[in-house]
Length: 241
Image (cartoon, rainbow, N blue to C red; front, side, top):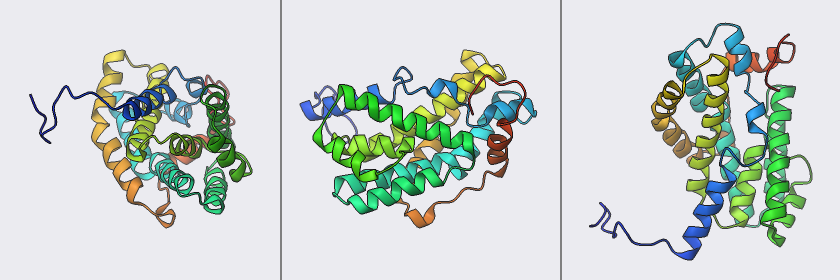
């Protein structure tokens, strides 16, 4: 049996490919302890305000965040951080790390991305330590946004960029859906339907982010940004953002 590209369907992965896949699946698994479960990226306020009431409205909200907001922007930061590490361009890496932290629209989103970035680096540093990782983190000279941390680590360990980017966006969307499922609430079947419906948008957003320059950065999800800001003073909260 062969695939469409002519390769054998049961051809084993090389040792390098297997290690890259293993690490990527581990680092972006929901069980990897970066604390993602405690953040909703403003979804908690959106549910409270009545903007998100069911699976359809959750899907539409997340599609906008992916295409026109945090999803695309984080993908661009990840890709550029990866390339800066891969080419040894430490000044560019420092500038990208600084821009990514400054780009978030609210104090809670700042906490969300920097706390996860810090946790991600610390766990990888403990379990997958390398000299290259320490040099790259030192070059950033400050707080690391989560997508920058993922791009940095993946470059150091030779995990392919495109796979890293698509896996990262899948992990982010999965966490958003998990938060929405608890807040609306939604059942597991509806949650999976939302995830399936967002598949082409995740892929297209990843492709756009791969080709984008830093000049292409920009967000047009004003309601999501307001949700993040207003969550800071929401009376009853389950999530930190």
